[in-house]
Length: 213
Length: 213
Image (cartoon, rainbow over all chains, first blue to last red; front, side, top):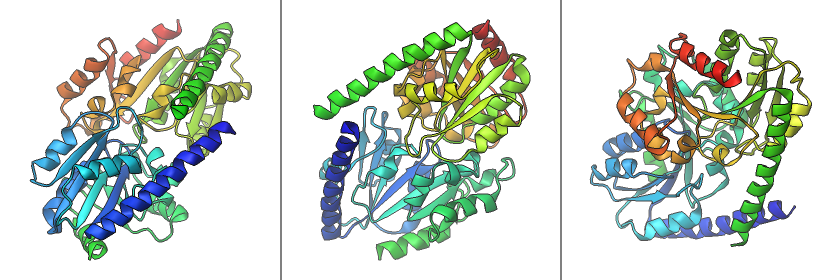
């Protein structure tokens, strides 16, 4: 009971701070997007491709347990970026975002991408102040992921299915994947893309532009 | 402080129960192997292939947040199996294993495979009573995973790199991957395998047989 109560208190405090973050983003005129996925699904690749194609000023918060590889890749695009190293924690929380945003110039930015820690479970529990939650799945992970991780997929505003260029060499049943997503989240759009070849990114970019307009 | 203290108490209680599980496994003559990975790296595929090749009696505990797909696949091999559905929890713990093992016939089994929840972060914190911890990585996840998830890779007794059949279509630097594993875990053997084609599984099976002998 004790444990449950304390977890509830932590989540309540986080929700409160997420609301404050959201207010700050709204005042600044920036739309924050929380990007969540398993390790290696292609969150960073999606952000890098989107920076190239979106045609809007963006800023990025990179979340990782350790390392600064992703922030370096984003920084090379001359985009404002801050790396958060959680040092072990399995998700970002609203307090980390508040701290990160203080080190980031949001002035003029229209979209803030927040790349969460690679984890298909815990990040879904923690609001950050985002306007949309995007779950990136990838073909090599398999078509059963929405059935096994319903919490994450039910929390998604949109789902991006990455690495469709590997469909010829991976056993993946597209109908089963989509059925699984829509069983827990009937309205979520699913964008089938390859960040490697660029295939399918146009619909994703169009969706983002509407969100930011 | 409060939060930290309670987390410590939970981990201490888990360690104690893991020791009791280990004692039970030792008395029963079974070697328990905790298999951890990102979602979709191939934990179930590795267990299924290993059942075919090992030539020793095994039992399996399948951990998932939801669904029973994996237990059904293992059950089809006529192997004793129990499915744990954590209902949201991001890892297995020693109490779940104790409960699962009561529903499982370990009599005559030499190896107990425990497939953890797909998560490259949280499961590393919770001992289950295992003799070995095997981390399954996969080529499509990328060569940077040991650098980004050092806690998981440093906790591994062995690393299995799965899906090497996708090397021709995925950008993956094998030297970088191995360097990353050995930077946090100098002694861990790395088995390069494809559960799809069977390539490389002989060394893994040989290692397991030694562990179980």
